[in-house]
Image (cartoon, rainbow, N blue to C red):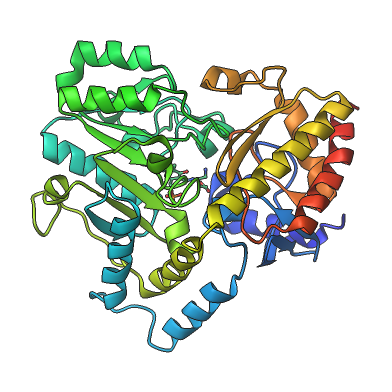
Length: 430
Ligand code: KE4
């Protein structure tokens, strides 16, 4: 595939942007080679700067659950554009989307919009600390909650991809307040809470881990966190920035039947535009300014453009059968990949949660732990990634990211993917 323009743009970008990218995981450090530059997306396809077409399984890292340039989202944006880009004041649409989120996610009694997932988790942590008057927090190894100082401790996603799960620049005083436990290890959580549960402000967890590849919770894990937080007066925060409206209409909390105290959202609710949100129990949210003493603010919070796109997306995903169809497509894709891996004699397994998935190059067939993810064959993944890319399929450029299917992924796109996979699995074994 010709990639001269991407290479040219990358070399130019390196002069003006650290690493030539505005977010580290885009830099292809996890797979080798130079990053691609894209110029358009349509339906399930991405088009790079050299006019190469790819079936897209990154979906802008999750937001594009309807695929690129969905007509309803585009027309909603075009309509809003006639009335302005933003006012720095409240709008009817903010009330509409807040009400919709509260109706779709019952644990959310009140919600505050922000402009990124990081802002959402940072605000939720501050709120939990203010509400409990406690400082210590708990996160899980391999989970990523955005680049919040206190959460860049054994973090996943880009931090893990670059081999820097603990970022420089985070004061020891912050990181010492963050306790890291093993994901899916309920016993360790019980032991930890027995020791210092009364000091814990909150537990923040990805109810389906999507930043150490895709690792769903094992039975009992989320239930244990819920019970321990209730018993010890800690706030349970479900970081559903990725899983919200992705794994199910009510998020992962509806799939697993657990009610968190706070939930963070992002990605899908902005339809691809900058957005985040945090919300939950009214008595906790009552502590947020201007009502309560926990300050939080944002110039572009509740952007009319992001809300217009988000509302159009939420309308589309509320259509009957949306998630059944999305889940079935994802299952079909994973079965097809597994069959082709087996035919090529490549050790391969996958995980799925609704419309998100993870692929692992390993002999193991049930990946539930961070240690198992780390033991996978990264070299096989890298060879597979590039062979898929050369055959017109764009996967996340990291072994520690989840993949995403959209409602725009039709039979043709899936078939193209599986055809590419036949060649790619063969390339893995060379
Ligand atoms: P943002 O600040 O990037 O909008 O959201 C941070 C965040 C919070 N919580 C979860 C569960 C997340 O997955 C994320 C961000 N996800 C990554 C992809 N795994 C964003 C991609 C990137 O960093 O470029």
